[in-house]
Amino acid sequence: MKIRIKFSKYGSLRFIGHLDVMRFFQKAIRRAGIDVAYTTGFSPHQIMTFASPLGMGMCSLGEYMDIEVHSHQGAQDMKERLQAQCPFGIDILSVKALPEPEPNKKVVSAMASVSAASYAAVWKEKGRSFCDYSGQCADFLAQEEILVEKEEKKGTVFRNIRLGIYELKIEDDALLFTVDASSSGNIRPSWVVSRFLDFIHVAAPDSALQIIRLELYTHQGDGPERTLIPLDAIGEEF
Image (cartoon, rainbow, N blue to C red):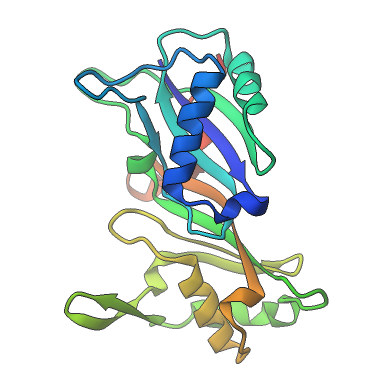
């Protein structure tokens, strides 16, 4: 059975990298006694994939990991066992079974299915707020071009990220936005925040703001009916 696990990452653990998170879960799954499946060969390892890796120093309320298991005692039992092995800074939010694939098709992994991500940017300094600039969100999105610099092998290039910003608004003192997070058009949240600060003529170092990933999404449907749904909307309790 293929399992999708949703978890949050916050506090001091936001400073550990993706490879350390992967190694932590490998140990936590063994200690929790979960009957996880392993690859075959001379160097077997747990069958495990993660959705879009989280940037260093960033908190998240919506991280995803897919594993395969041979047997289980239910979603709640697996969630409680795994949570018991987690330190402060990682919470297991949900455990769901992914649906069986259609004939001649494979289940799309969390990493391959990510299409978009939503974020919140908040000021670390008390008393500062984005609320005074809520009226400028529409003007920001009305731009035909929002350019960012990107370093490549051939040198610095400019990229227009406007089409990859799906939504941007201000609520409860926070700047909320949803952007393209696919492998072909991934947009860094820091790009959006820095360009918006430039637009409203506010100077601030990167360290002045905390960026939180709220959710990861995949596309559902085709054509005009195509919509974004959270990754945990796929699958069911067991």
